Image (tube, rainbow, N blue to C red; front, side, top):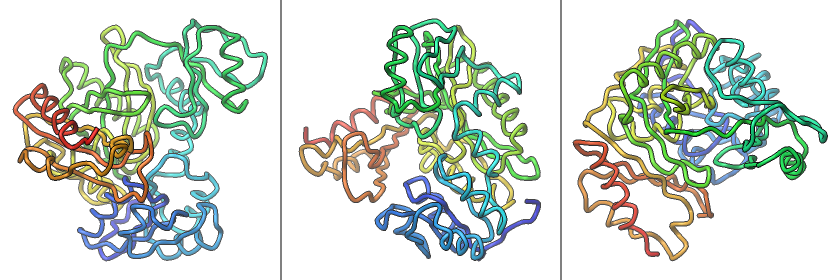
Length: 375
């Protein structure tokens, strides 16, 4: 991974969602060719790639072509088949590495990695059998080890028998049981690392979730500087321990005035979307720079404060939102992802607003979202 990959080399993307779309838009602006492997013919990233391989992620012929035609391959989601990444790695550079992704895509592997490296995590237990009786305080949250996101694959449980019933409802698959904590707030930090060890971090974001889905991100986070600095320090430790290459997002819980690592996302992150409008360089261009061995860009903000709100499919329930109203405020940017169908809970786009304070930015973002709704 020490080689520099210059334009017009070809960058491959496993996955075709909005994160891939923005990364490939950045790559094309920088002069790279792009190729996507994604089974959905209408996937957002596939629609803007030079080549869209419409095939399953584990399709041998598609993987062979992606590996042979691309100078580096990355991913835009954390659940690509491990065999697919390993197959690609035998043909071309893969960043982040299959090993790093395998840790981040499995909560059991992730917890063990964090614990083995002395990183702060909350109390948890493994649940992998019907008669499990873990030594943990309730209430607790049962989460599938694999494939859970945006609140999917998890249940809040009050005691052991309820936990066992929830385990069966989740498919009797390996799970982690996390003690429910008294959270003061939730933070995230988006960072980048090159194969040579170059490191850059964006300002820490403060996040609010609704029904397990990110609703609002505020930047910079309204927390003491020591906490923000600690989040960046922990992120550097994590990326070094993983020998990570690319953009990584780390989510934190703030409990009793200190940080606990919640989870890792081996890709650009929803809470970093504000960087498209209010940072010197977006997290998506940073991803391309990192995986291509280029110098990392300036992560500083271009405005004092920003707020990002997600636009879910529910917003379409009463008809197409009134998009023109989002443009009435010159301090607001609208992003739509080009998805074919709006569904409840599906991320269809976002709004980013900026102001002189995080309080003003939050008010502006919430008002902008209300203004476009026909409900």
